[in-house]
Image (cartoon, rainbow, N blue to C red; front, side, top):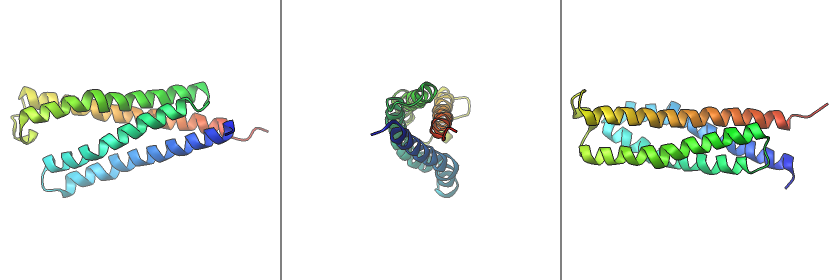
Length: 152
């Protein structure tokens, strides 16, 4: 496969992943929390979607990084992959353990409860991880599109 074809495929994969991430954060998550009968159920539903998004971000980020992309695009792709990896394999397991320890809705804990505070902090880290991955993917996509533009 030629380099331009690899870069086009990389741009397409990144654009698809970025679109999926945007739909998740802008439509799926808010919709779940608006429509489902409890925050616990909504959180469980969104928590079921995120691992697929994170794993896809890791795979696509690594694939783009080795596709012969320009250095800046490769670095941005690796940032996206690492952000997804940290969220999926470091932060999410901690959230899962904390949920199991709480053994019920987080919302019933008093606001100052250490477990509720820790849950909020970890959730914030997970959101930041996805946000970082999305920004890095957008930056990578920009560099790929610049590299693909016709030269005169």
